[in-house]
Structures are given as structure tokens and as C-alpha cells.
Length: 251
Image (cartoon, rainbow, N blue to C red; front, side, top):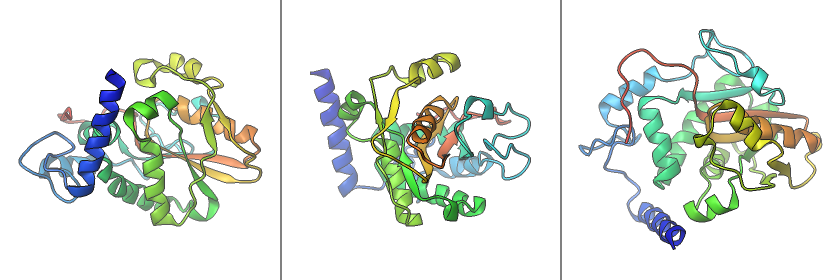
């Protein structure tokens, strides 16, 4: 019954988005005084610029800044990984609203940021299709949507690349947010498989957040087992390093 109420609540919020897509609250901090076209109040919008991922002085494999620990060794099956923002302050609020509070209208804006990143990285001509990270069936039924799928579809509109539903979960797994690094990797070992042969395809995995890289690595391994030529990864945010200065906590 609890799951049913939660599902109905998510559906109701998603329906509300169709008739009132503009959020009054700032999605970065929850300020009720209003938000601009990017769903952020002025202070959070300024903070957002400080949280953009670096385009230089970074690992060319995982995109991690040089002053932080490279995570390439955690994702040996991922050819390249990039992210748009550090998962801090207003970025955390944006992601949590999109992921947990059914603020799905943010998908287009988030995809615009990812599209700009793809253009700067010059990956578009190298990728054949986008592949969203799949969600466990029970969680999908409860939430009513997969945020990675929404993000991939919005990005497809901007890039013209197809979205391929290539991956599926082989089993239900505990939520990664409740686990630490090694536990995350063990939790996802063998948790994904490809639905069909991906021979010769260069694929771009799409998700909202890269934390330890365990989910992206498990997905990439499954794609390569299905004979994909390469698996890259692109996320809106990544847990990488602290950013100096006082940080809003989000809501």
C-alpha cells in the first residue's frame, strides 16, 4: 500500500508538471522567492558556475581534476568518462529534485548542459547511440520514471543520436546511495546484461550522477561483453572533490 501511495504521488506530481512546468521554488536551495529560467535563484545560479567541471588540468580518461583522485582504475571498461558539474551545493538540489521529487521538467535544461559538453569534447561523431543506465524494476514501478532514461531522451533531441534500450538488470540490488565504494562494486557485480548484440557500436552511457563509478563500470562491462566497440560515460554531475567556499545544502 505504501508503494502504491508513493507511485500515485509520483504520477500526480508528474501530471502537475504538464500543466505547470515552471517550478516556483529554486531547485538548488528550495528558496520560495522564485527561480529563473534554469530553475535556480540568483545566488544558486552564480554558485553553479563555480561547480562546472574543469576542461583542463584534469585526467583525460575520467575527467577528474588533477588535485583529486583519478577513478580510471575503478572503471577499466569505460573508455572515457565526463561530467558537467561537481555534485555539490545547488547541483545536488537539482539532481535530487529531478531524481526523487519528479521535477522532470529539468531534463531539457540538464541535457542542454550535457550537449554543450559533448560539443566541447568533440565526441558526437565518435558515438553511435545513447544508452541510459537502467533502474531496478521495483524502484521504477515505485518512482514512475527512470531519470537516466529521461535525460538520455532529452539529449537525443539535441544531438540527433538514437537512444538504445540495450541494458537490463539481472536482479534487484540495494540502493547504491546506502553503500560505500567496495560495497557498491560488489553490489553491482553481474547486475547488468545486454538485451541484444551490440557488435561494433560505440556507445555513450547516460546517468544523472557518477559517485564511485561502480554503476557505469558494470554497465560498460555488460556492453563490451555484448561486443560493443567502446563504452563511454556521461553524467550531469560527479562526486569528485570539495569545492572551496560555503556550500548550500539543497532541500
